[in-house]
Length: 238
Image 1 (cartoon, rainbow, N blue to C red):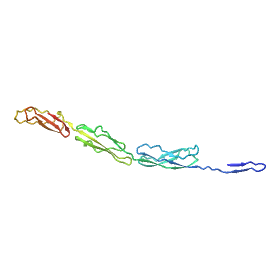
Image 2: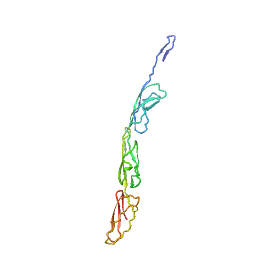
Image 3: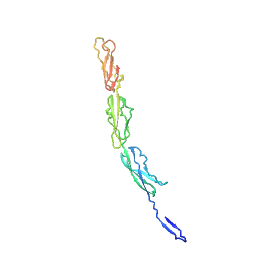
Image 4: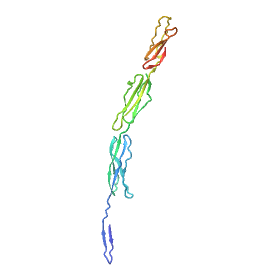
């Protein structure tokens, strides 16, 4: 900057020069820490910028170290494009934290009750994370009864383990007269010994049962009563 006094008849002119230095403004830009749960989308990353001079602006980019497993990752801020030469910027890192996810198992309960002899399939199950394993196979569900089936996902560093339990019921099959051969008529006179006919299954039929007789000691017709047992239920008269 030059200062001047003009020369006159009474005094000489004069000149003086000084240098004015405008130094860069020192500022600190801090990356804001952020977090998410494993498996979720990253939130928008931001930073904190102090008040700038006048209408000044900065072109900044906030990024983090790549990675999707549970843990901590650096968040950094940098200038992008042409830097603003009026500022001496100190960048401070932030921390991006990925936390462990909760987990759950959903079981399709559509087929949790069937009848003995029907096709049996295990209920399907799916989890939010991880592979689902089952403690039963179809071979374990053989006879009539109620079975507890447990589904499990193992705990990992990124997500919690999970367990779901359902009851699968195999109902006993109703016994029917069509399963048995027809019993031939037996006629005896009173006082004679009455042969007690044994119910027999028709070819291809499979049932477990007990049988008894009704009216086989008096005059008149006698009845054979068959009752299902084990995987079969119900009572019929032959």
